[in-house]
Structure formats: C-alpha cells, structure tokens
Image 1: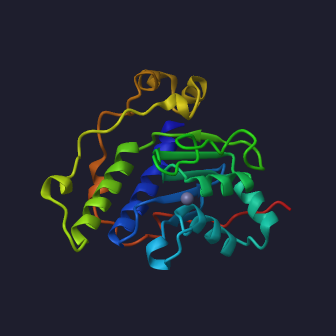
Image 2 (image 1 turned 30 degrees about the vertical axis):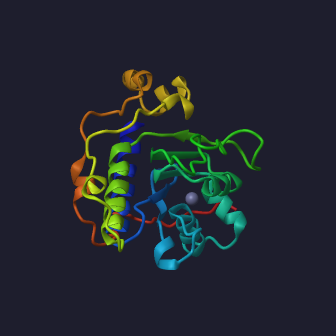
Length: 240
Ligand SMILES: [Zn+2]
C-alpha cells in the first residue's frame, strides 16, 4: 500500500510545485479511484481567482463535476465514494467537511495543517457527530517533508516580495529540521500497519518520517506544465 500511496503523492507534490511556480500556495491533490486511475485533480487557486474557498480539493471536485460524464450530485457522490484523495497538506476544516458530506472514504495527506487542519490537527471532521456523512479514514505523513519544503519555499518568496523585506535571518530557509509527527493523533497502530506496513511501525512509535531521504527532485525541479500523461484523467464509469 505504501508504494501506491507514494506513487500518487509524488504526482500531487509535482502539482503543488506547479502551484508554487505560478504564485499559488503550493497545495495540490488527486482523486484516485479503486482501480488506481486518477479521476480528477486540483491545485490551490485562491490567488488567481481571488476566491478564498478555491482550495485544491474544491478544484478537484469541480473538475470531476465538469468532466467524466458527471451530471448531477448523485453521480458526483457515486464516484467520490469509490475514491481516495491524495493531498499534499491536510485538508482544512471546510474541505474535510465537504469531503465527508460527499462520502469520500479515505484521505491520504503529506504534512499537517497546523492552523486549519480538519483531519485531526485542529478538528477531526472525519469522525464523530460533527458532520453528516460516513466517517472516513485518514493517512498522514506521505512525503511530508517534501510538502513542508514547498510551503517553506512559498513563504520565503512571499516575504521577498513584500514592500518591507524582513531581516535576513527571518528569510533564511530551514531545509533540515522537521517537527515530530504524532501519527497516533490521525490513525491507530493497526491502521498504520495496514496502510503503510508493519515493518515501518518504528516510525509510528518514534513520531518520525517513513524514510530518511528527502526526494529533492520533487520539490526542486520546476514544474512548468501539467502534462496530460502525468495526470491521466481517465473517464469515469458510472453504475446507475
Ligand atoms: Zn480547504
């Protein structure tokens, strides 16, 4: 399962890099069906659209609605109920709630969202009584450092553009230190073993990342275009 999660998350990280290269907050996602086909994708679009709700997840939902033969909410729910969402940053409370109301069964994310996280960091919308819809599973920590690094790149760039540049130490990029990841706030030990692999349980126990290596090419290489072969939106089959 980890290899599958990594494969899709690498694509999401490249899309987030595309966002960074186009002056957007580097957050991106894919919707992947049970057969492993990418059925939709989204990139944060809040700066271009001047719409504070144009998060990557909403872009992916809208793209699915506009394509693949999805004509109404029933279709949309039907497709989403078969999908896993791969997103570089933990969904915010708003997106986490929308995903539950649409019946998404599973979210896999990279880094946690310290201010707005709706899948365990600030609120845990995926379970309990707060929101209508079935409960869903969350898997954190897939390419977490890569997701964090893109956000750090973004904030340094933003600071450099501001009229009053902050001092040099503030602008210095931290490429080495990453906070611990309290896995157990997001999933149980058993879920971790099933989703990621029991051989990696030491990472769960020590709140560490899964791999000692950072995949630098994913974050450092510019992403100039969203290539169709890179995100192959397969036509969704409806079963009504
Ligand atoms: Zn959101």
